[in-house]
Structure formats: C-alpha cells, structure tokens
Length: 90
Image (cartoon, rainbow, N blue to C red; front, side, top):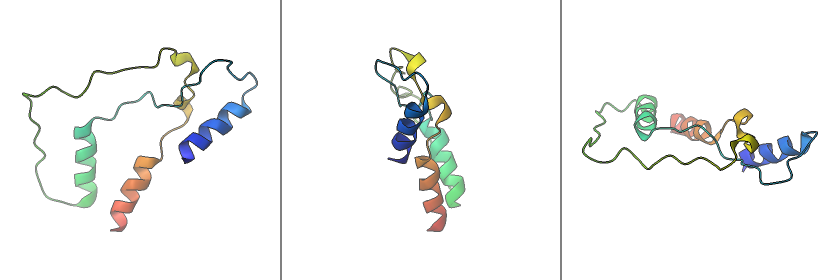
C-alpha cells in the first residue's frame, strides 16, 4: 500500500499528469533463485538450493504496452525489504 501511495503522490506532483493510464508496476524482475538465496543467507539456514533445470525457467516476461507512462522507475518496492527485516527479527 505504501508503494501505491508513493506512486499516487508522485503522479500528483508532476506538472503534466498523463491523460491515459499510468503503470505503477515495477519494470524490474526478481528471479526466484536469487530471492531464495537471499533468504537462505539472511536466515542463516545451512542448505543447498536445488533447481530442476528440466522445467521451464519461469513464465514469459510481459511488459506494459506503454512503458513511457511507467512511473515506477523512481519508486523502489519496499515490501521485500520490510519482509526480510521481519525475517531477521525472528
């Protein structure tokens, strides 16, 4: 919710608000293997992460039809950081 609120405030602060749709999504992808490794390191759990390379590597990438209206480039998701901070507290 904080990310959306930040995006709305950002759009409202623009001199020329786009007349059409505005993409609030993030244009960056996070691979599951990278996330799993990050969580493994942060938790201190000593294990090996194994991936089944015979399976497809995720879903095909999709991008919004008009990335020019993406305002997320300056708004970085804080949800992952909050979640990992909570993991450290446990």
